[in-house]
Image (tube, rainbow, N blue to C red; front, side, top):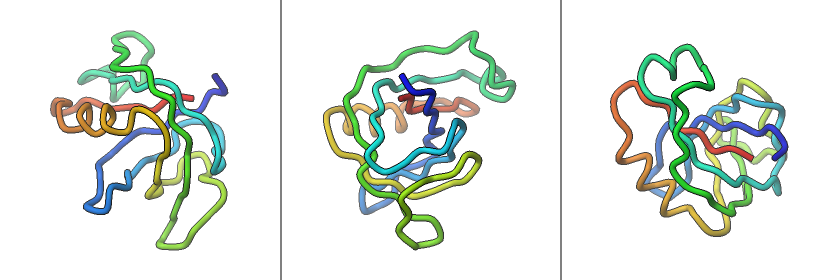
Length: 109
């Protein structure tokens, strides 16, 4: 894995995900392989303890928009609306729906 860590905030009506980049800059075309969840207070402290692997996926960052402008890279700390291609998008959507209050869902690559 390349250290990519996208915090998945919500899904938009058009199927794109709103994410915050919690890792290094990530470019369109990057591979993402795991969906994880950090529960409650562990999410706030961003600790590695309490991390639960929800699913293995094979997703590619297909497109990213920041402030409604298409970008090739999502910088660390920035939020974006992203489109994903590959296997596992439905698993990600289900995990997002099922997560509890205070939990953080992460897409890892």
